[in-house]
Picture 1 (cartoon, helix red, strand yellow):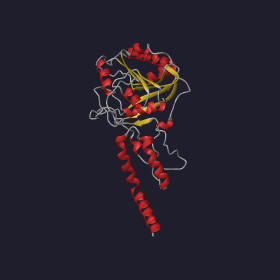
Picture 2 (cartoon, rainbow, N blue to C red; picture 1 turned 30 degrees about the horizontal axis):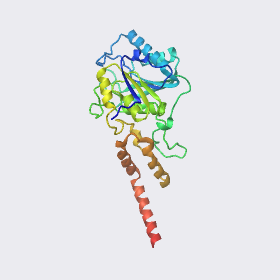
Picture 3 (tube, one colour; picture 1 turned 30 degrees about the vertical axis):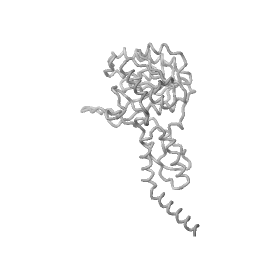
Length: 314
């Protein structure tokens, strides 16, 4: 496979490389910085003193703010220990516009004997101004019930997102300690950028932002200071694409009460294009759900149609 010129992987320190990027040139920043939880990233360990970590965060966020377009959006993953500090830097020091505090709920996590086990990470969504891209139609989820007053293109997914962790048994799992599911990046990139826009990930890690941007026809710059991860990303971008490695399970549901055949047929025809374009492996599950809910009705309608055609022949 030829090198994709839309994608650029930079080996280097995030802060130093950010300084080289032109001001007001990036449409969207989606990044997962170190949480300062003593993770081992090979080239660096995530164990700064409190004040050092805040200064590190302040410095890279300031540069990220500088390169972001006035119409741009920034999503920052962060653990609970430092998320309030990151929020204050973005809102009070950089004067960015708060949009959403997204909770990523995952199904498994570290167990605790004393205290409650963590089952979520958080993502802060800030914009540089009140004018920004948000493509709601690109990220809607199927409605629970059919109602004429509802938008059948789907509903807003809300700010609590349930996606499974990237378990080690996942065939797309890479040798990186904090790899995130592709479907989370899919939602953010679809919502806050358009085809051809420039996406930036200051801490590229396993390369998920680059991989998702590649499949969604965006340009992307990823900065990573570990040469082994850079090589891993390069190889990942050469792999064949069979669909993103995770999905919001709600994407497979079909609304109840689709009793009108014409409306139901139209909806089923559109569902795959609306919700499953990048999740081909889930189409069969959706079709099974259609038959589970509407199989008897579809069969009865077919029998009725056959009888009507038989009468017309007689």
